[in-house]
Image 1 (spheres, rainbow, N blue to C red):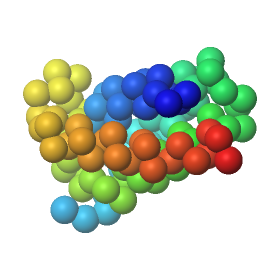
Image 2: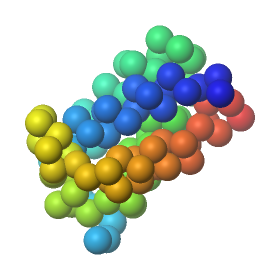
Image 3: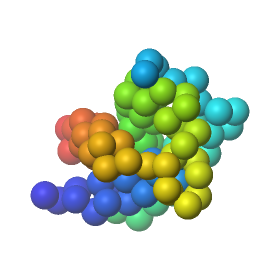
Length: 101
């Protein structure tokens, strides 16, 4: 897949910003989105990067609880389970249509 590298860069960003829809910790959603856009712009136009990263941030907020997002913010990553990693991959994949409409 042409955008496999974008999924590869997005998954670590989700982990770096590591129940029900989450309330992102203060500033974390914006920081995640900004870092995602900065990374994605190396491979796609800025508008596509912004759309993809905004979608990814929304999906994370819908898929993970606040406690899970806080666990993923742990820089060690020790609180991120294999199941959470799988969910992160699915969340980012569901936004790929923004990169190649």
